Length: 292
Image (tube, rainbow, N blue to C red):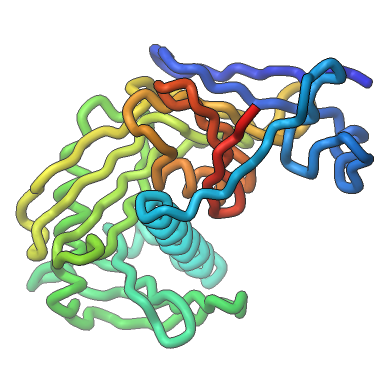
């Protein structure tokens, strides 16, 4: 059996470790039915001389539930916006040519509504609505032709535009905004997610989080999130798909909502190493400790 390879990917000045553990395709397929003593799919098989396999203990405390809830919400909204954008292109609509400058999202009866926004003579206005079905149905596209934004939509759009204008030392030419109400307040949580244009490459560093006032006119707190470098990961290396990604977390004592989001978005388990030496497993929208 060939030993798993470790792939390092660094963009800019990368001070933190990011390791993608990759297995040859045959070995990866073999993990679908693990033999006794082997790890389940998505986990690294421990070396033969290991004293005991790692114990994975799910965490359900309030701080973990909050990180999981926020991470899943980021994932749902970001995914809906991506599907809605694809629906525009399938219908022959060029967002740039159509003057679309962004979008807002809100819950719909059967999923998430993505409203694409353009600049009108009276300010931001609706151009198209795309409802993304939570059950996996085809997105529904509707022309809006200048319909006014609701007050909440106007505040959300303003919050996103304000935050996107405050990205100091960005790691990407393109950032995707995700905006929703901060739980328990009327403020907006704005995430600016760095994107990569290289196939199979995703950004681990370079993301931002802001807290913005309800009217979208004032940043209350926030900025760039750890790690401090433009760190990127690869879903495959030398033709072998990654089965897990290891990343250091220098600030938070537990994995954050961004770790939950990245694991879901890339469909990869993350092994998060915090500054106190603890190992955490983030996979399928959950957080667990890893005890040796």
